[in-house]
Image 1: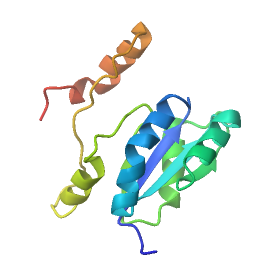
Image 2: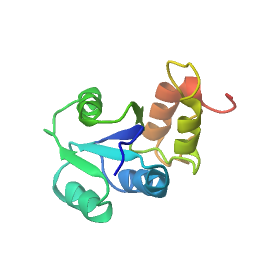
Image 3: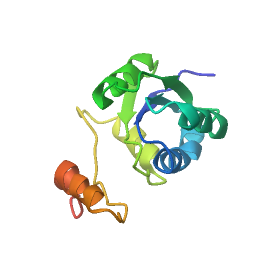
Length: 143
């Protein structure tokens, strides 16, 4: 297998249904574009078993349950053998052209690539509060 140009790193803290939806949205894209997917998990237990069973192509790494999300990401990045790394959160669902868009942008002289973050039709007020707080700069209708 040839070296991947891109690795996708996901910090997993919560588990299903979030991580499974995220990985399903990336699964075929990673195959189509020879992209590595690295899940760095702190949930452990049944979550770890589920990810490893349902997504055997994913590089799965367990970390201590108290490790911070930035440290999980940093660890995943350190495992990458690719030229570039994309980070996606476990509760995100990638559009069908997410990886091809990233790969297409790599020919430009840019320091970072990003886009809008749409809500997931949350039912809990806490989830909406987190969405508005963390992603207000990336909410639609930003181009």
